[in-house]
Image (cartoon, one colour):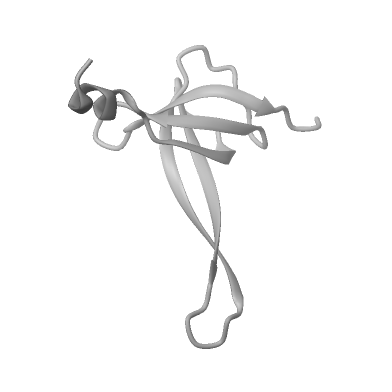
Amino acid sequence: MTENTEKRNQRKSLRGVVVSDKMTKTRVISVDHVISHNVYSKTLRRHRKFYAHDEANESKMGDLVEIVSTRPLSALKRWRVSRIVEKAAR
């Protein structure tokens, strides 16, 4: 393999919590990250929501999941649920 194809095959992966499972085959995932303020050195928690494709509708609200980048599947979906890391206590 050439160097370009190796880079292309590496997918970005993120971990987050399912915040909505109302749609069919689509989950809304909230991904948190921690940053440090430049001036005050205070730790800040930021989050971003991603729409992810879940073919089997396996993940439910509150589950910790891992998502990977993929080709555009719809107007908003560019991610796919790769695995459920931890099930939510129900």
